[in-house]
Length: 217
Image 1: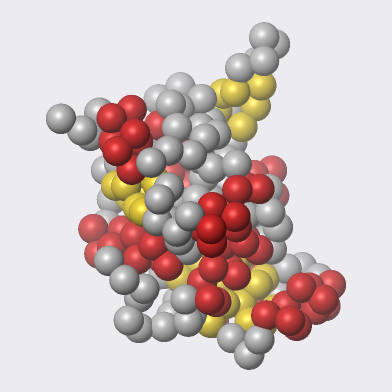
Image 2 (image 1 turned 45 degrees about the horizontal axis):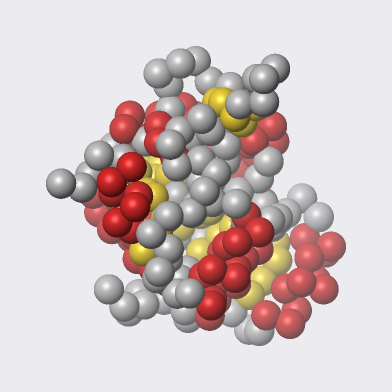
């Protein structure tokens, strides 16, 4: 797989520790990227040096003008953001990188959702008119830039979704970000990349990831 042959208009809802490095990778691959924020003027020092393909806009404008959206706001803010921009997401691919994460009293990472409910399925119910694909969720955010630039395609990023064409688009964008996509299946099969899952919060080679999730052999 090579970099996507057709540049896309990508939007990042939440220009934080996940959205910024992933957006920079996509810019380097030739896509245009709009970073959405409630205060886009505060993004000028970040966006300005990134070149003509980068822009800052409000959350609603980013959602309206982008073909594919990365949702990378803090989890506690996600419901409010989706309520604000949801009308602009109909018919679009939304890459959900949010995590309902909590710690137990003995220090174990767990999901805050009802047992058996994946974040991908939860997000798909919040966005019934969009196509949700999970990606960029199980990796420590401080590694997204360095591993995607210095060791391109050595490390895997898990993806999951119910729509095969949408997953193909997201797989290409994972590759464009410098990682190798590993398809876990549908949204109901995406628990390994959620908080408390066997992949969270770590990085693996593609072979290691397939073995851990039962895809190898």
